[in-house]
Length: 498
Image 1 (tube, one colour):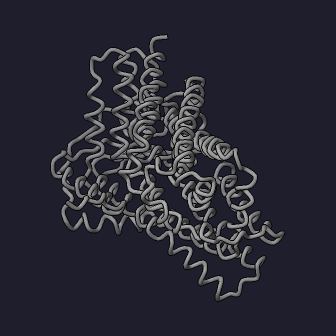
Image 2 (cartoon, one colour; image 1 turned 180 degrees about the vertical axis):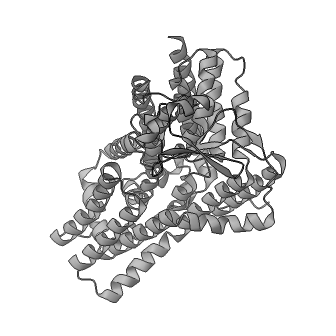
Image 3 (tube, one colour; image 1 turned 60 degrees about the vertical axis):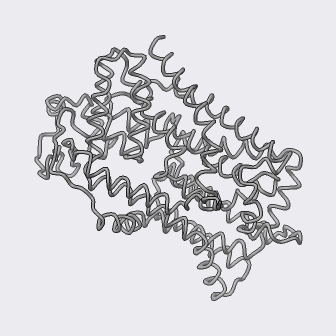
């Protein structure tokens, strides 16, 4: 009997989109009223059932709406997205998503994700140009000699540094740029591609899950809960350290098994095919790292350093990041004196290599569009908020983690989740006698735990770069997810009883 092959990432997402479309026929449509601050008019705008009314931007207005957030959080820009208003959920006319909406969703998703898709394509173009110079071959050869016998240092450094970026400024989508570059380095160090994928993705995931000063999760969530973001910071720092160490040890144990015996790799049957995807690993001739190639690698590295600095300190987003990689590719072409026609052809070919990844990002966004248009996300939020009635604080704390894990499938955006759910969920903490920071923590840990396996997140796009199936990833990552879940439950339980 022929073995059934696990479907590709694109097919998995289309199946999920179909299931979500069916759910819009089953789950009632509904929506909470939303409040937003209009900075130009200096008024609050309340949107309900398609109508918008203006209200004075005062603390009295917030109190009247049962929103326990200080006015300054809105006026100084801490909360810049519309938030849900407690106790305003209304069922609406059903908005089921049919076949036409299903087939249009991926296309709409690609259009709405154009910024990140263009970034990915330009990264591919830059990589193609650097590949043409031979700098990667020279760099990998040099690095292999330097790390000989100490390859584990690569796992520790990459995982920790990416986790640090995740916990401080929300390094997530930007990590897509690192996969095509770092994975060949891990393979050259006699590990498999999963070690490279996990060092980058798990680093980002655990950093975001245990955010400490991340403005896109813990800060906006704390603000939306009416808290100072430093409330509960010490506990989150402790969780960051513990969980990051656990992740590094887990990856290193698997990596060492693969290094000792390549057949222990979960993706051993794909070894040759994966290595063939990276041209820098196919050249048997050792490329000498000349001063010119060193300059190429310096410019290439500076693109990422400038990107990280721009995002974290200058408020950059996709347009600025994309421009950085574009300028970098032109500078490299000038350094190695690539002819204009050769540069364009190489850049376009490099971009084409990541086109499949770009499509996955767009299709994943299409799933979210079906949910939004089907008006089921707020219904699920309303049901979830009713689950905790009458619970003791220990059970409440942990149920909230799993509620947020479930909601994150339907609302994968961390900032979107925060502003939509915190005004509804955080007051529930008052009723069971725990601090609202407990709900903020539950939001972070629930969202973070599911992020490891969330097909509507970045994992499928990350795996597509090395053509590793989602089933192989699940086999690799689920033991770690279970370990982190146990640690989270223990931590959350302790925090409400000490």
